[in-house]
Amino acid sequence: MKYPIGIQTFEQIREDGYVYVDKTDMVYSMTHTGKTYFLSRPRRFGKSLLVSTLKNYYLGRKELFKGLAMESLETEWKTYPVFHIDFGIGKYMNADNLYNILDDKLNGWEKQYDVEKTVDDINLRFVKILAAAHRQTGLRCVVLIDEYDKPILDVMDCRYKVEHLGVTMTLEDYNRESLRGFYSVFKAADEHLQFVLLTGVTKFSQVSVFSGFNQPDDISMSNEYASLCGITADEMFQYFEEPIREMATYYHCTYDEMVVKLKKQYDGYHFSDEMRGVFNPFSLLNAFKHQRIQDYWFRTGTPTYLVRLLQHFDENIDELTGKYYMPEQFVDYRADVEKPLPMIFQSGYLTIKDYDRDMNAFKLDFPNEEVKRGFITMLANCYLQPKESMDSWLMTAVKSLKQGDTENFRQHLTSFLASIPYTMRRKDSEREKERYFHYTFYLLLRLASTFVTYTEKVQSHGRVDCIIETEKFVYIFEFKLDGTADEALQQIEDKGYAREYATDGRRIFKIGASFSSETGTVEDWKEA
Image (cartoon, rainbow, N blue to C red):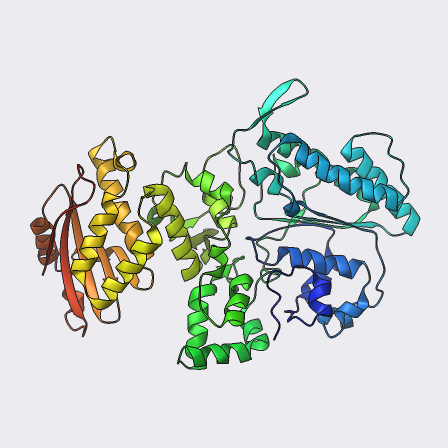
């Protein structure tokens, strides 16, 4: 089986015999029930392949759709004039880049349709090209724009300044205004347009990029198109039964057990209130090709815009996840408000996990183990900025906890905490000091996500700071800031935190730890 990893062109996938998960029934529905669409999905989720599929459909390349749902649905197969712009190919770190990319595209189209360039204005030129194409072909035009938001995301929060018409503005604002003007073409050229699709990661608020033209039909949270990008469980069983069985052999487990492993690692994304789950296609295809469960999606890199935004992040991630939100709190991103929740959600690091129909509220949490581990690692690096490698610490910590070696775990935890710069842990109030140390310990233990980890687990007798469960051991942690390990250990006993494990066959470790606000690391540690 040939896996189309890194291949985003529909024609190459079909011509070269790569596996293609058929979504053309939804493509047909889109093209016959609407005109102007917007779709937001995380990176590497198949947006570019969708655009390529639409391009080939509108170019009338019937032979590429042989054997797919589209073959029996479409009967006319017209050849429309198609205008495709992929903003993902450029970098937009200065004021000329966006103009140059658009100018290059327009030059090619002006030659193709014999349109004389009489003005420099990008917007007017594009309107003339669309009108000429419509007139010459007798068919309205199709416009497909991939990664429409990249010119803004590249410079978001960078504070680069430019001069424009005598006004000083940020490059982020300049690119936004340029795109708003360009997208206003769709309103001016409406009579010449058959179909328009814009894809990207983020949906900016209506007062921003989209205000220059009639609002597109946002299908990002549409039930009908929830699985338009990504791979559903049914599709995985239909197309990939053989590689699943091969992986089961390698991991010495049954077919059903292998499915559970894949679901835990790569499934869990939901893009509508119907909660139809989809797998991350990039990671799933890589897992099948390499026959290994690894963090493929996260290894491709963290978006720089998200790293920059998280520097403003003043909330603990455990205070953000597992909560219900109204749609307006996470669907639209308003660039003038430094609240990263919408960007975290739209970038794929949080997803919908439940829907309260009466309240119209959505519960957001990590979609799967790959994303949780990757995001916590990124957040811990941003929050703690340790000198020691986070990955190195994690490998040692996981091994120690698997083996029940609490002394080795204590030594490496102490060493790692000592590597965090003093400036990162200095806080002004006692509450902030305690919050910092609790959150630090929380982040580090959440990184050990091979295990079932509970932090501040509520029991009938009180709230536990942290419980980690492994196959053979249960670790119950209580920690104090500038206190003693004896006090922490006594609280475990007084509150009866270990009672629910009284009949558990695993060995129970009760650990009291004290952190020093002066040294920034473990000061006292006792076990029972």
